[in-house]
Length: 113
Length: 109
Image 1 (cartoon, each protein chain N blue to C red):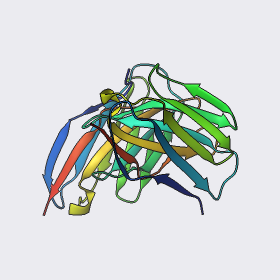
Image 2 (image 1 turned 60 degrees about the horizontal axis):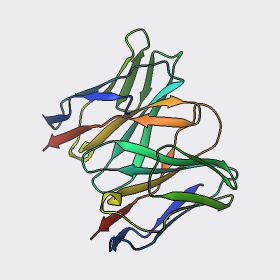
Image 3 (image 1 turned 135 degrees about the vertical axis):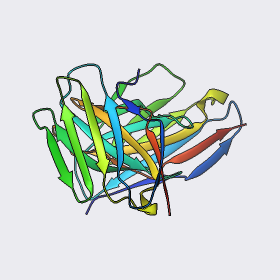
């Protein structure tokens, strides 16, 4: 069966520090991968998605970047965090075919001080 | 901008009652999906309904889709305390989903 791992679960970082969040998927190959951010009490905002290794699409201009160095690994990064980067970050995958559900990790709660 | 808009924003019911949540959207879609989120956790997929389908069932869940009105509803029958969570609709376009702000459901025992 397929599983998705996201870490760390919580992270407290000072303003201006770098960021690296990692997401890996097991049990499937060539998935579509997604990074979302969820503000408190709100829905999910799509940040990045990837249909293959090295292929990244950015949905909103921001202080963050994403990379996909391996088929089942998706990394969210920042060189210098801002206060506004605080939030709940979720990674998800799907099979890359039409009309497929997405499957989510348990998220990372990021607090910027 | 968010495509789906859920209604109501919050719903409180007694165990055993039915819960109905509604979702409206603005443009043509490939599919509409419903997800559940327990506090502080990731989202769990509940049901996907394609644009050419009108109704789907899964256990105690019933989803309807009216593309002429650009709306969908999620019905949870015989609710349980464990159904307490946030419920999100998401409209599917190609590779992407656009999520609404969600309905917070509280089921009192």
